[in-house]
Length: 368
Image (tube, rainbow, N blue to C red; front, side):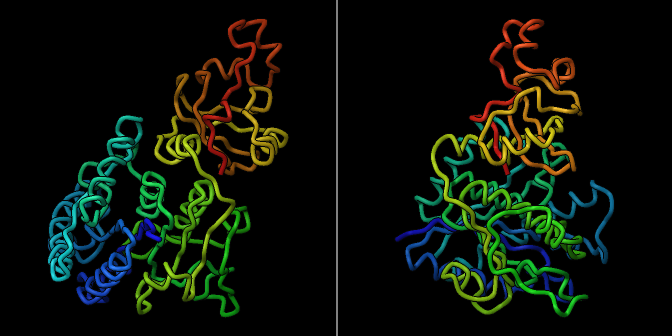
């Protein structure tokens, strides 16, 4: 049966020890993608590396610290990177198409649907979509932040069957294996809780923008989406094919299966939408959201942060500051400040039109 697979490769895996793009690895990766395609699978590749390649082209020995120079490196490197992919894939008769995204491209429903239609048409035409963030124009508000999350958004956008992150480590360990020889590789994660987040530890390499923490965030999103996600060492032989076949050392993130239009809508809200603020909830509200599938009521909100309007996407935090959900607010921040902590029947005395109005309805709320 044909599967739809999103594979993400990071800069630290793409670049060789000399700071140059590792063409041997690019050939191996493309060969594996072509093998999957011959078996009937459809593949989307999310590739980092543009800024790292651009650094080499422009002669920077270290990662620049200012945004304009980083964006210049991305602009210079993206052309070279996509050309290398195109040349290698052409040897197998495969065409590739470049897809550059910012969060702003998918934050509204129209843009979300347009992006999905583009992916679907490329795949119908037999083209391999190669995706990267449009780093040359991204600003912080509309940045995905890292390509691990970009890959998760793409996977949810096209309703992928599997998301594979080709990393520079076998997967998620109980501790940093470089400093803890007794660290154990977790083969399966069904829920991202505080313990799992703590295991993720620090930041990434000098080439990339993320680390294991960003991969765990992506795993949490994929569990919410009902899409399995695998983290494996990208340079380990036929790592991508083995991950797709369920072989090799790796960590697999997989929770209960979910599907349907409403879940797709929630994923768009939780992953693609730009959070305009946050609300903190008490323990009872957190349990109702995480265990009961309830709407968020104003009575359970203990504090409000940010300046947002009715209809904006807002993050929901528990009392420890942990992100537990994102949803579309039915109150502005100003109104929510006035009514947080109050029951709906009390709120109705001041706002008669809000008698049955939750702060966020469960149909517009993605719980992680």
